[in-house]
Amino acid sequence: MPGWKFLSVILIFYILINLFFACLYYIIGPGHLTGMHGDTFIQKFGEAFFFSAQTFTTVGYGRVNPVGFVASAVAAIEALMGLLSLALATGLLYGRFSKPTAYLRFAKNAVLAPFKDGIALMFRVAPYKKHYP
Image (cartoon, rainbow, N blue to C red; front, side, top):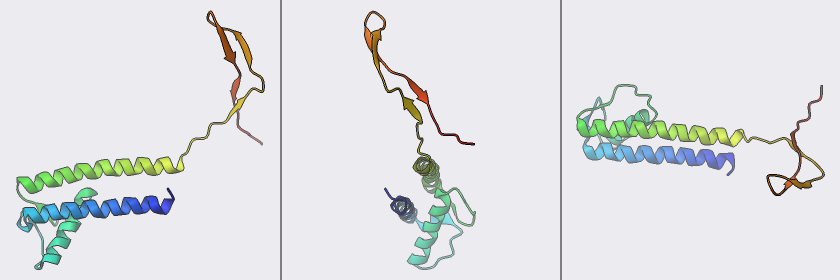
């Protein structure tokens, strides 16, 4: 997958998961998130979305916070999912640019030789890398 598609998938996942949790917070009720300043539906949903983003990334600015067991439980689950998602994304990103390369040189000839009460195909393998001063 090209780099721009990979980053697009991560961005889309990030937006969708935050929209999902913002909907959960809004279903629980905006009254269970203290510190919200919005008056309209869009403003309250926007605050719930950005609270979700802050919880998912564990930034936690502290102006909006959950009140009650259900809202706190959702925030705790979201924080755990954020940590696991960040670890997964970091591993995938690292794997994209750290492709290991084996520098091995194989012998040109192989032999059949006795080995442990039988016959085995044997060949030599040696580590090889060009090092020029």
